[in-house]
Length: 73
Ligand SMILES: [Zn+2]
Image 1 (cartoon, rainbow, N blue to C red):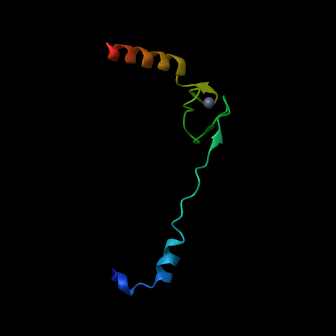
Image 2 (cartoon, protein in one colour; image 1 turned 30 degrees about the vertical axis):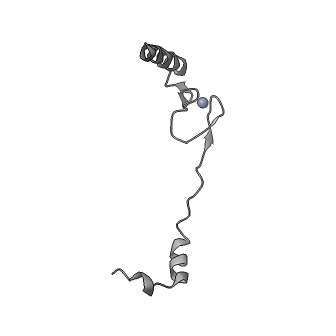
């Protein structure tokens, strides 16, 4: 059951919130380019995951530039 706010002592509220702090993000180094990345995800810097190239980063960048050129016209 919800308790009206004025019935809650500040100490009780603070004790409850003592467990709500955010933990820092756990980063791991990319096995290919050594950049710090989120674990279990493809590296956005080099496109590698588990020692294999998953995303061709250079081709993707070229495609992006081509798209921007088309937009400017
Ligand atoms: Zn990488």
